[in-house]
Length: 245
Image (cartoon, rainbow, N blue to C red):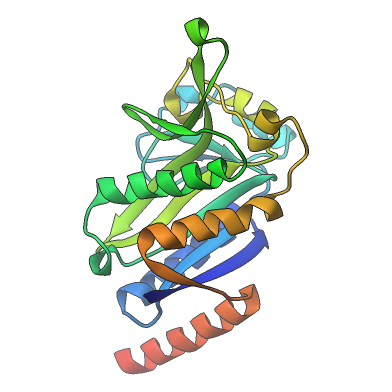
């Protein structure tokens, strides 16, 4: 099995995380580094995907600034979403050329990793036809509806992936009221904490997500501290620069 570097980079701004993804993706395309999975949390931020409709942002940018929420346009797929504390954000930097060149399969596999992790906590998550991400059924059977537990938005260039998934653990769900999440007006977001009716930390969930992710992609996970990953990346970039000259 090929190695998968797992680096938990903690609470980090969306801008910083995006810049790090771009650096890792460049190194991965040059085959100067192996596959990587970044795990992090973001301060309050709303992001717009390539297909986002501005009307799905339900408040003005002035209101966002008042609430301390950043707004960013991105090159990922999908519509509008929210990231914040209590949510595990995963950014896989994978070379799908060496795994499987199939975008649909890749998205379904990200979903499967979150579904598997949810099952570890007794939560039955599922897919909904025509809607990306993972969902749970809530309410009585006759009036049951789905609420979104995990979102996905990806970008793939030369078969190297960036962006990824967001899994709600103890997320403050009130922030989703500021948007039409993923452009789906009649569906709400939920969290593992809400579904379990108990406090739960992201630290409880991360190992399960990593286990299912690595298993599904056929990779061997190796934890790498943030500083070690950054040092390795800097050395790789310096070597790439020398080679390019």
